[in-house]
Image 1 (tube, rainbow, N blue to C red):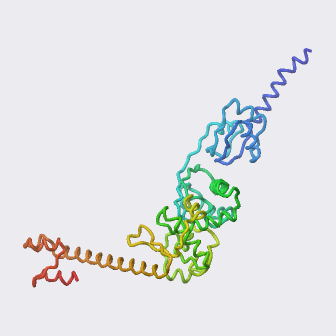
Image 2 (tube, rainbow, N blue to C red):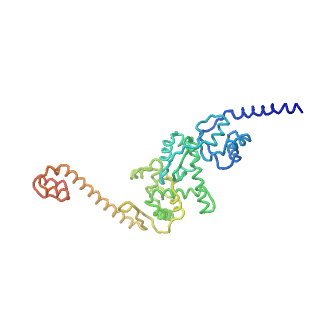
Image 3 (tube, one colour):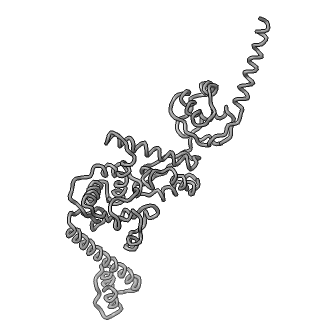
Length: 367
């Protein structure tokens, strides 16, 4: 009996030594880690599955230290003791960076913006994206993201792709009752063309109807927006580019849809791609003021719209040239140097001055 009581202090001493050794051992971890929502049991289970060596002892210790934070958290370092790791898991918060992916922007410019904002490698980011993305574009939905500073390239791409995939899946389930990735991305491709071509959200269903109508008639889409892919997102489409571009994005050369989506989409464009308005429209072009499109069902009417817009632009250009000439006139004959106040008034009212003096030169410049 005495020997039993004698051994109890020794037993506790051994336990303390074991705990001390365990909790002071070094842990190597990523600086930024993801913690799911839930209790200590589910969090420890998640960490264990993701190659963090945690067990029952850690679960008990977490109950004493506090409830772990959920979401992406910044541990500030990659090397620490086990007890420090558990403490940081319960107290650390992520330093978030705001990054916006604008609807219609391409992955090419978005990834560069990400690299600059989060101070990570552009090359590694592009390589990781190429390895993990399902298609060349349209894999990350247009939105504002709050991303933890300290994520590496792979963590970041996986995080963004998983957010979008989850949203695509939920929306597809609501509309179709199932999610088929291959079929869904056909709609994403159509949505990306709508995104590039529409002047407003109200027009999206109309642009969608033109796409479907032309495909149904086996016509080439012949849309400039399809050539604004990747690094050409902000490039003005020229006849030379149309002649030289041999990619599937060139809908002037090839029938059907491009092999990949063109850009990031928003929910309005994907809905328009799935639910186009019923119409007989086959053509559209920008209106005179450039704020919307004129839709037509015949090429003859489409040509009339083109001529009308060209004439309006020509008139506008001539008016602009006149304004430039007027400014040059004012600079050459400064009002302070002209004594005749009537002449000054004529110049500022943009009237032609019919005299044989210095003001006579204005008339020739004005023409």
